[in-house]
Image 1 (cartoon, rainbow, N blue to C red):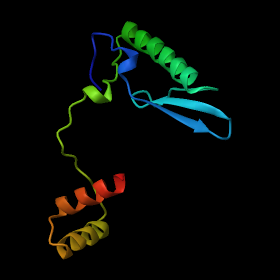
Image 2 (image 1 turned 180 degrees about the vertical axis):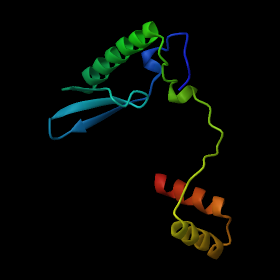
Image 3 (image 1 turned 120 degrees about the vertical axis):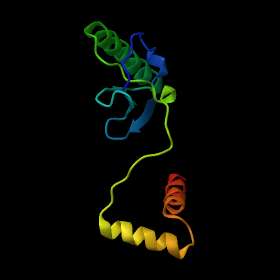
Length: 117
C-alpha cells in the first residue's frame, strides 16, 4: 500500500459484482478494500452502494492520516515474486519441467497461464 496525500477517486478501484442465489441479490466487492461489500437487488444499486461506502472510507482514512490503498491498475509490478514450496513439490515440479525440456520458471509460467483460461 502506498501512502496517499491526494484522495484517490473511488471509481479508480477494482470492483466485482456477483449474483447470490442464496439471497437473490447482487454482491459488490472491491479488491483494495477486502472487508467492504454491498448487497442489493440490482447490479447498479450494489455498485453504487459500495462506491459510496468506499468514498466515505477514503475520506475517513485521509482525515486520520492513514494509508489509502493504491488502485490495482495504478500499481507497478516487477514481474517477479518468490514462492516457497515444500521440498517434495519442488522436486516434482522440477522433474516435470526437465521432462519437457523447460526451465522451472518457463514450466511454472506455462502452468499458471494455462490455469487462467
